[in-house]
Image (cartoon, rainbow, N blue to C red; front, side):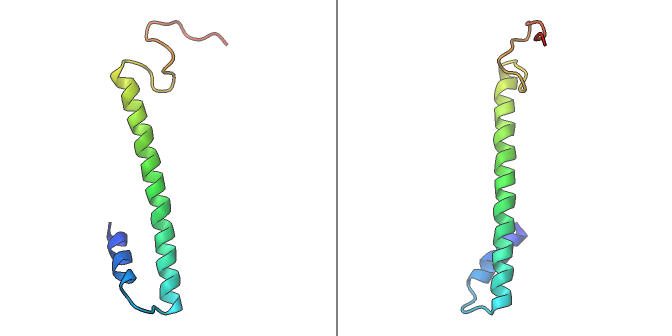
Length: 72
C-alpha cells in the first residue's frame, strides 16, 4: 500500500527527470507483478474453499469422500 501511495504522488510531478521516470516505471512494474501474484493466490484459495464446502478434496474434486484410492 505505501508503494501505491508513492506511485500516486509521483504521477503528479510534471516533467519528471529521467531517473525519476525510470524509478516510477520500475515501481509500477513491481506493483503489477505483486498484484498478479496476489490475485492468482486469492483465486486458487477461493477454488479450494469451494470444494472444501462441498466435502471434497480440493486437489482431486472428481473423487467422492467414500471412494477407494485410484489405481496406478
